[in-house]
Image 1 (cartoon, helix red, strand yellow):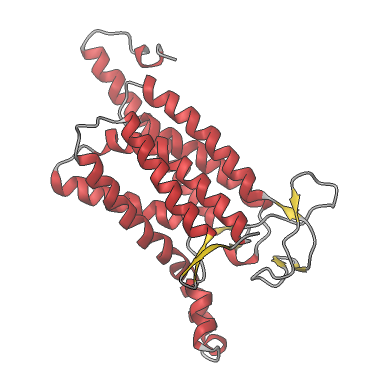
Image 2 (cartoon, rainbow, N blue to C red; image 1 turned 180 degrees about the vertical axis):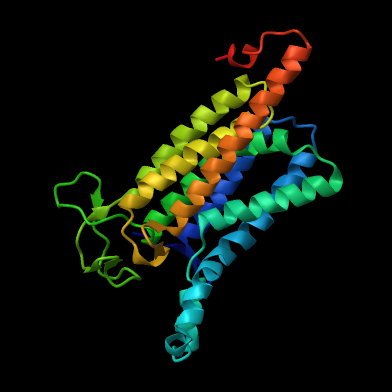
Length: 284
């Protein structure tokens, strides 16, 4: 674990932040490589999505924690100010960033009459790459770790005693200096594979919106499954599932319904043109 990558004039520069910025830069390079370099709208929408993503990433945690604070205000009002703010704003959440970025994109594109689906497809190819860098940052920062595993597990990792969590805190209690599943790196690897699949689909698909819908379906299933192997207690468990799992369910349904609608629309257009309704799959 290397939470601080280097220092500048005595100011520590976190590994997580550096990797997040690097991931955004790589994502932009991929977008420019795959997209129309003459389309200036892409640059504007990308910047808007980054801004909306950061806002959403910071706001989702306090929004999900607010009911708990209100129900247990007698406890939280006694906490020192720094502990209260750490509880409310102690982490950024990917799904919050995704939701914030989507909202920002929709509002901006609608306001300026920019087609949403073609740009959304393009961005969907690069999003898993940026996310993979972020997950690597989580690993080096010592957060978002997995469940306790045996010493012989090849995917296990032991965080050092000076971990900012003072030992790994799981939903089942404290696990000091014991191996936990490196779920951050596992998810990062899966995200890179997803990126390769989406790039292939993006180049072949004839339906605007197909790639971004496929991203929503695949990633929601991936995230829902990997959440069962997460061991950090701070992510929020409500009933049987975590916050991210509930969001994954909504994302899956929304992506699947939109995909069906787009396919039906495409087939209807092909039928009107007296073309084979399955032509959009011929490229695969």
